[in-house]
Each structure stands twice: as structure tokens, then as C-alpha cells.
Amino acid sequence: MVERLLREQEAVGSNPTAPILFRVDLPYTDCYTFSKMDQKPKKRKHFTFMVIPHDGSAPAFSFKIPHFALYLTLAMVAFSLVFVGSSFIYSSILTRKLASYHRAIAKNVEQQKLIDSFAEKTNKFNDALVELEKEDNQLRKLLGLKNWKSKIHLTNKPGSTQLEKSEQIAGEFNAADQKINERRASLGDLKSWVGKIQARFANTPSIWPLNGHIVSAYGYRVYPWRGFHTGLDISGSYGSPIRVTADGVVKSVGWRTGYGKTVEVDHGFGKSTLYAHLSKYAVTRGQKVKKGELICYVGNTGYTTGPHLHYEVKTAGRAINPYRYLNLNILSASRVIGN
Image (cartoon, helix red, strand yellow):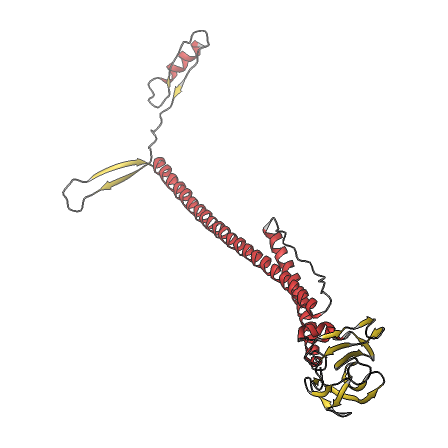
């Protein structure tokens, strides 16, 4: 193989274009031949920047930047711009979301305060309705009416969450509205009843027919005659004036056995009054009279032990205790109207 290489070298001679052959003896290996061809050196690409002062105070100078360094710099600048821009956009979005979140929290706090305020006002309103119901029933009791039992029950049990509180307030307002309707109906009943009392009060016996005191009460007695006494005996001097105890029409004027001279007045609504043991009359049958008007005088006619007035109050023709009809006002009269 060495001889072949020498022959090739001789054949080449002095040809300048022929490749240069090198013989290298490598230890422990075979001999190899390397060929080095003429190659033009590669030119490195770069960018030249020249700086020229405008005033000429300093000499111009230039500097070179490899193209890959410029591209790398531009890529880094572009990446930085994209990164900064993305960060700015993300920061802006996050800032807006945080601002919206804070506004939502503030609004939620305001709503919670408003709900708590409504809940407090609702509780006060419920308490006022309960108190109004108590006063309503007290007035009914004074007027002799039955208590009004509400079918609506209010609760003051607070909700644990905002939604529960809102639902509770809505439910309580609905219940309160029904309560108000109940109170309105109850007040309508009271108004109607008071109007009825006012209309009937003038026709309800409510005053003393004679200035005196009771000498014999209504009910069973043994003196001066044994038996049931159907009226009140009121003491009075002979000839003292007796006044009618309610508006009405004179039903009868005349003598009755045991009663002597009597006057009976019809007051309407099933009520009438009787005045007995009179000395003389001041009215005639069929005459209209007003409460407090003079109708007769004290005497001792009939079965008597002395001058006095026998006074009776009747309902549907049946004698009842007249004592409850003395000194009535419009409130106390409401308790006996209808009896």
C-alpha cells in the first residue's frame, strides 16, 4: 500500500493544482491519507453602525455587531415587549376584577345592613301588631264582644344566611299584610258595633229615673210582701219628678192592680220601662219622649208602704234587673245592648 502511495505522488509531480498528499504513520493503526482541498474562508455577516456627531466636536466612530447578536437582541426585545404587554394586560384585567370584587363585597355589606335593618323594623312592626291585637281584644272586652283570634302567626326567629333572612323578611311582610287585613276587618267590626251602640244608646235605659236611693232590690224578697220583686224601689218624696230613662214612645198610661198609677214606655229594640205607684201623669199614650224628659210624679198608689217609685226594665216583655241600666255610659251600655 505504501508503494502505491509513492507511485501516486510521483505521478502528481509538480502539478500545483494537484492535492497535497500526506503520509501519516499512526501507531497501532493502519496508515491513512488525508486530503486538504483549497477552500475559500467563510465571511462572517455583521452590521456596522456609524456614529457621526453633528457639531463635528468629536470624530466619527463605528462599531460592528454580528447579525446573530442583533437578531438575538431583537428577539429578546420583542419577547420582553410581549411579556411586559401581556403582564400589563393581565394586571389590568386582574385589577378590574379585584375592583369589581371589592365593589361586590361593599354592595353585599350594604345589602346585609339593609336586610338587618329591615329585619329589625319587621320585628318592631310585628311587636306593634301584637300590641295592637291586645288593645283590640281589650276594647272588645270592654264593649262586651268576643276576642279576635288571629289565624296568622308571626315569628321573630332570625335566619342564619342572607338568603334565609331575605326569605324570612318576605314571609313576615306577607304575614304582616294578612295581619293588617285582619286588624282592618276587626276594626270594621268595632266601628260597626260602636255605630250600633251610638244609634241605640239613646233608646237604651241609662239614667236614674229619680234622685233617691234603692230601698228594695230586684229579686226574691220577704218584706214587705213575700215573693219575687220584678223591679227596683227607689225612695222619693211625694210629688217628686220622675224622668224617662231613654228615648221612646209612651205605650200605656193608667191604673194597674197592685201597681196603682203606671206609665210604660216602649224604647224599641225589645226594650221597655215601667214606672209605678205614681201620684199623677205628665204624658199621654202614644206621646214621643226623650231621655231625661219629665213623664210622671212620685206617689203611693197601689200596694205601697209609702211614697216611692217602682221602676222596671223589660226585654221582650220579660222583667230583668234594672240595676245594670243605672248610670250607663256609651261604653258600659255596649255590654248590655242586646240583652
